[in-house]
Image: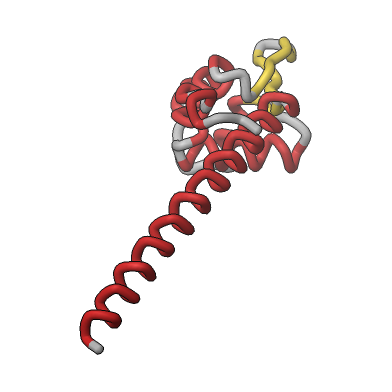
Length: 117
């Protein structure tokens, strides 16, 4: 299992932006796209799309290939799977923490009830 220390902050910073998540969704649904094609479907300029794609590319979430005068972007399945694994690990760790907090709260509650009797 991935430890919390192994969570890639750059990866999560890239995914943390709602526009970039929407871009990933569109790229996954369409099998790829260009800054122009994504720009037509998002409420941001083509230049903003290109900047967001640059962030996703640096995080390894997308790969690009030349397509005429533009670049065609596709989601990197391996890096996306890595992100999912990290999210699962973080969720599992938080579940364990919340379970421990619940146990402590129940013990405190039992202690308070015992002293009232």
